[in-house]
Length: 128
Image (cartoon, rainbow, N blue to C red; front, side):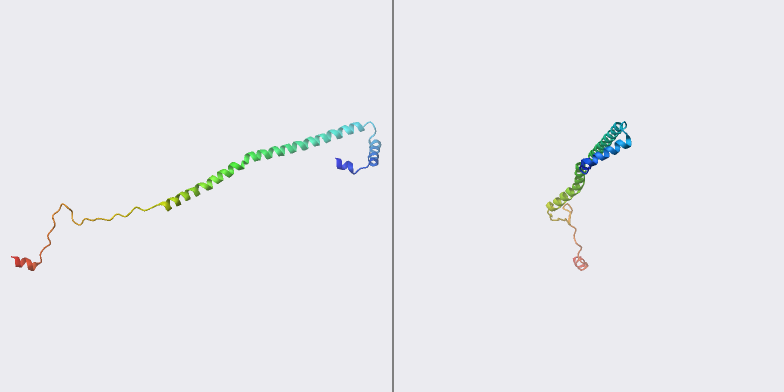
């Protein structure tokens, strides 16, 4: 509104007031001024309501989004498998296989008597 009045000089305002007086008459000027004032007030209130509603919806969206929780949950989802991989790698690095023990085999059981090997047929005939 101030910018509008800065462009108009005093003589131009006087010319506009004379035009309004001649065109509308002296009796209707107060009602026109009241109507114009009410209209400007309603426009200002509507503008403020729209601004407040935009701010309120922005805050609601911000609360609904809750970026910090989303970021924290995503971080945890990514970190869990990585922690498991690190744990598996540490286990693999620190793993030492058990020492090999010598394998002992018993060819003959201890409680049994040894079996004699048969003599060749030549020696059997000579012995008789």
